[in-house]
Image 1 (cartoon, chains in turn purple, red):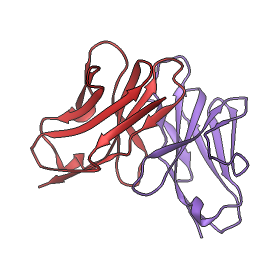
Image 2 (cartoon, chains in turn purple, red; image 1 turned 60 degrees about the vertical axis):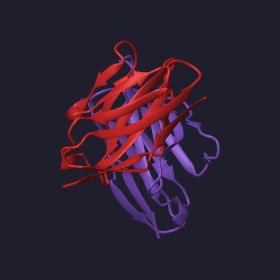
Image 3 (spheres, helix red, strand yellow; image 1 turned 45 degrees about the horizontal axis):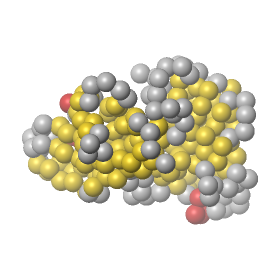
Length: 116
Length: 114
């Protein structure tokens, strides 16, 4: 099946710094990618929908200036957590949907962010 | 608007016993329904999905689910549990129209007892 890769899988950063997480579709082109966060023992919450070549659409309550999303190509979307705080520590997962191939979406392996 | 309710945040079964994980959905349009599995410290893997057609859907690892419109349910079953099935399972729904957003349930953690 299609493969979506996230990098890094784990990252620790200091409070106040920024960290970037990459999401790549390895064997298909993804016009749309989605970013989720998952707090411990909770479900996945959609943060934003990323469309190639245009601005991301953020869900209500998600700070667009804090969580910067860039989808510069059909195979890469990035999430940058700016001025990170300990409460931003979470599991971030991206997913991607191949264009024109139905409704299956594929998830990355996720990225653990710990802000200390 | 759409939503998913998974009954039981934790389910324990004995190895070899039937697995039944419950999922009810709410959707204002014909839904597409999914079950995903998440192993510890990993991303999500698609088990199966229902879009249109046959209401009994077979997935990987011996799992299957049946779409019952009258009950707005999409329960996940497996006849015989294996130790390797221990994981967290998420039911999800998306609208069948533009498909832009997937809404997840809160998850059910399956424990398999030897």
